[in-house]
Length: 203
Picture 1 (cartoon, rainbow, N blue to C red):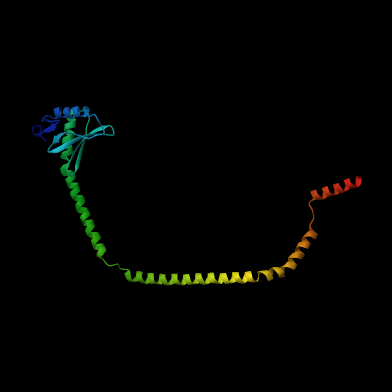
Picture 2 (cartoon, rainbow, N blue to C red; picture 1 turned 180 degrees about the horizontal axis):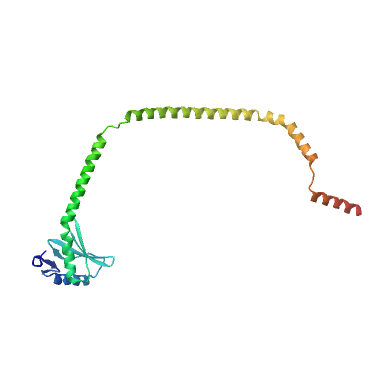
């Protein structure tokens, strides 16, 4: 853009020179008493210019439907150019949004067609689902039958438990007696027992 077409308002003053405008923007940065609070410092092409500090950097943002941001530096003339370039990108950004909108519209149309299309395996799915329900019912009945049989067997075992213990008692008693007869003490215990017997004899 030609220099004579440049015009910006900073802190109530209109500037047509980029360097003077950039110096005015730097002066506005020095006047900020609360860096965390965004302030309006002027207008450019009808866009309000808001000044803020983020991550140690001064930024000028211009917002209507979209937000355009220029990062500032100590280069006065460069600051004016950055503010100007932020809006110069508007046609490019607008084109990107239009392309994204067209892409989303195509994806939406494809999704609608896919949703209206009948499911090719719908009949097969219904058959499989019915068969699965039958198998689940059979398995449930088998589990219930097995549980009942186990309970009956347990009751029968408990009822006959006393007779079983009585029948096995003589055999168990004979086994214990045989174990006691066959028991052989370890060598250490045997040696100690013999020594005790000798000491008693000596006494």
